[in-house]
Amino acid sequence: MRVIELDEILTVLDESAALAAVASGFQRHARGEAEVPPPMHLAFADPPGDCHVKAAAVAGEEVFVLKLASSFSGNCAHGMAANNGFMAVVSAKTGELLALLHDRGQLTDLRTAMAGAIAAHAIAGSRRDTLGVVGTGTQARLQAKWIARHLGCKSVLIWGRHTGRAAALAADLGAQAVVLEELCARADIIATTTPATEPLLTAPMLRPGARIVAVGADSPGKRELDVEILTRARIVVDSRAQCVDHGEAGWAVRAGLVDAASLVELGALLAAPIAFRDEETVVADLTGVAIQDLEIAKSVWKRLTGE
Amino acid sequence: MRVIELDEILTVLDESAALAAVASGFQRHARGEAEVPPPMHLAFADPPGDCHVKAAAVAGEEVFVLKLASSFSGNCAHGMAANNGFMAVVSAKTGELLALLHDRGQLTDLRTAMAGAIAAHAIAGSRRDTLGVVGTGTQARLQAKWIARHLGCKSVLIWGRHTGRAAALAADLGAQAVVLEELCARADIIATTTPATEPLLTAPMLRPGARIVAVGADSPGKRELDVEILTRARIVVDSRAQCVDHGEAGWAVRAGLVDAASLVELGALLAAPIAFRDEETVVADLTGVAIQDLEIAKSVWKRLTGE
View (tube, rainbow over the protein chains, first blue to last red):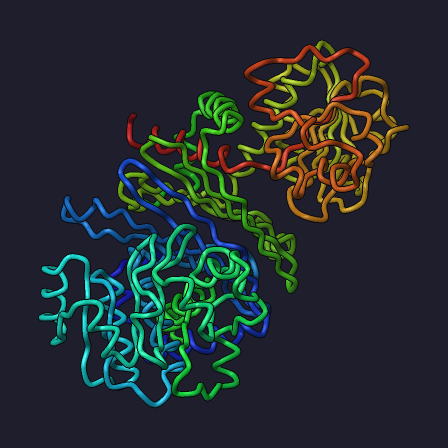
């Protein structure tokens, strides 16, 4: 059994290969080829934190992956990153633990950003010049980088509840910090990345044909989009089961306003692209699926074993 | 982060302290103090294998535990143990991975045996002389050792589908290999430990006042006891939710023959012992609960850190 620490993981990771692997993983997931048990959530009160456990296996493959990702916001006060975790690469032939990728949550952060870029590309259509990023945390920074790079955006707008943090992130990224209304009015595509539990974006704020990649709602209680946005939009989901359970789409489905059968899985969209009409609002609801963990961990493992 | 290999785990483990911790863990679980998400199962076809993932946290504690336990029966043909796995000890304050207990499934085996001994003690009543063990695998050996020691049994009977293996295990344990009917007729308490998917024990085989500890049924599809045994018995469960979902009790509950509300959780029984009538049949249905993993892993972790 090998323990691979973060610096080695980042050294060997081939980002382009991992992005392609995550995209093809979504297609396998949508075809029902992956075994993805419902994820586990653990919540902590003192100090506040939460933890997600996900596992995925694909029939016939040599390995499967179990991952733990945690977030304790209070860590920052002690000079530690909020996010942490690991991915275990396990033999699907013998059950042996082959490698512990001690990624401290960074592979989870990366595969989440990759999913955002893949989804943005699949729903963007022709208007890709301006990206708006809602939030100032790890995913705000990563989605800004990955979506802008993958779509070739020309400018990035940032909004955050803390204006100081938004200004700092904008300066870092060569982006512009703006108020939320301006962001919604100007952006061709919007990535929402906050842990909000009340909607931040409402339907009247959006321009016709808005494209939104929502990555904040990853556990019960979280939401960034008013339900009126969802009832009017075409909705793409990374996992129908998970998004109905705890994604943005779930709020609309549970209220009886959206039919779960109308949700299009991202993997199916990648396999058979849809030409969305310019004036259509399209939301990609991403809760994070274990197939992404499996693919990025396998991508690292293959490089380590020289496959 | 420390990686603790199996030999060190077994060296530092204090079995008596761990047994007491598991018993008190059951009481915490029954009081609702533990956060125990539904476990994950992954099944593999080629070669056949399965994998359980469990996690538990108790509010206020320093650590929580995520464990993976797998079983690939074909491993034995390659000179490897069928069971494998690890337990991750994670800070409940920061999310940091503190220790990887690379127990290769043996802490899972042990805590399962401890639960059997705890349950047997709680349901045995006064007749404890003869223990009957159904099965010849890892849990047959461990339940024989732990129940016999914890109850002070004077003799142990073994039955297995493979008579050669039953004879070998009996010789190893100083026990007696018998046919199943004789085992049921003579044993004061019976431990069933097989991966059967059809009932092995039927109501007419049992003598009045039979006491059964059933540990085989730990995932959907498995069962060792005919439903008629369950409809006539008092049923103790390690976890009501898990046993209704995939334990022995679940077969009777799903058939509408037993009310889930009548199932007594083992932790509640430990807190308020019941004086079962001599002629009463009592079944302890043990699916394995993450609180057991948390307690045995904490027990090892405390010894390593000198707490």
